[in-house]
Amino acid sequence: MKNDQRKVVLVGCGMVGMSYAYALLNQNLCDELVLIDLDKKRAEGEAMDLNHGLAFSGTSMKIYAGAYTDCNDADIVVICAGVAQKPGESRLALLQRNTAVFKSIVDPIVGSGFHGLFLVATNPVDIMTRVTCALSGFAPNRVLGTGTALDTARLRYLLGEYFQVDPRNIHAYVMGEHGDSEFVPWSQALLATKPVLELCKESPQTYCREDLDRIEQEVRTAAYKIIEAKKATYYGIGMALARITRAIFGNENSVLTVSARMSGAYEQLKVFAGAPCIVNRSGVQRVLALNLTPEELQAFHHSCETLDENYRGINL
Image 1: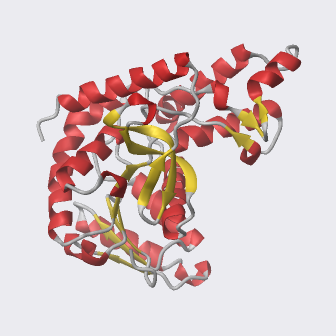
Image 2: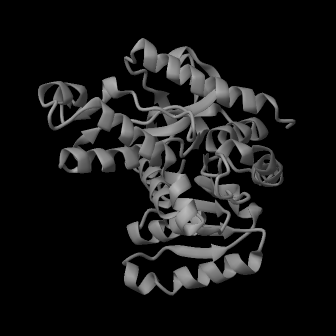
């Protein structure tokens, strides 16, 4: 990846893609942003709208509607294209419809000579990230998805409210599928350096495991509630994409719960799932293997089996 340029190509100018683009502009996270959409006129309009805010942003970002040939010298291609999730529809039900969309996207990107990183947000994100890896032929570390990054942010927000502390001082993760089989490894959840399960034992009148389970369920069903209320979710995932982008361009070695290929971690192979990973300029530097309890490890296995079973049904 070049150090003198930060070029992002965004494929899909829907609400998720444009929430991400708006975050890029406000946080000055790249120098060049190319917008690609099946509706080229929409991409042109979105580029105009963003450019009109440049004078207020303190950045000289170059923003324009482009084509797949513009991926040639890009550092990151972010895929947000796909069919919308319907109210009450599981992420996995989107699989077959979105696989067809990805076939028409990844081939011309790779054909352009692109040699950067793929970052995927389209649901079901774990499977679509694996699909992208298979279609592109890229090394797995160069293909990552948003995974459970947003779920982890939701968890930390709710735990921050529950314990009345800054969510940034909560260290807890959501793992597995970004969807119905995701889970929280509570044995790894900390408030600063204090395990939250210890807090529950020390102050049973104030904190309890039942409340933690309720919070976990609230995290798991958050997207469905938002979709029911406003038809779609986009601000949170847009910010998650921006955070991952910052980690890549900054070569941060940050720990983020992205969707990455398991290569032996948690006794899993080939499947892409959300887990704490070290993210830097090379993409996923490595998957961190946490000391999960047997029950938590089984929950992760179940989630990975669900993802693998659905992936095996795809005809690429």
